[in-house]
Length: 135
Image (tube, rainbow, N blue to C red; front, side, top):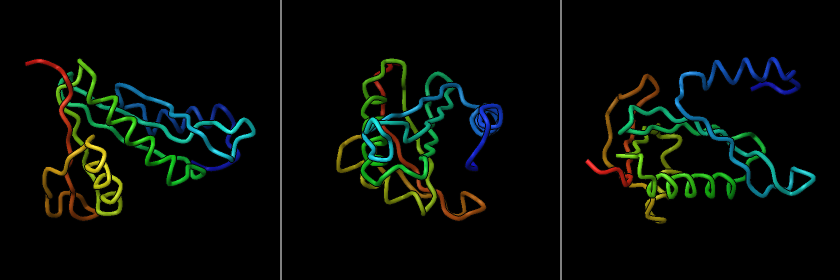
């Protein structure tokens, strides 16, 4: 998103980018770019059919590597405990693969496979974690 947007422009950009999602979270974390030391570092859009949940992370440019890691670990940890979630599926391009590979070390997301040429931008890497929804 561009800098210096009015509230109306920001809202329109949000609708265009995240309007198709069933749920939207704004994530706050500790960050020295804010006077209070804490502020918004990410948006997470979530599509669901009631069983499968698919997130899309959007990190603001001021989000540090630590903010990104904490956001992802916290999100997947939260999803793992949700009784409404059957499974959370993540589709990743190679450029994002490193972040999701790190989630295995925290036990909150696991690599499931690769789809060669699964996107116009290259291979797609699949990850998932089960929720607590009963069949």
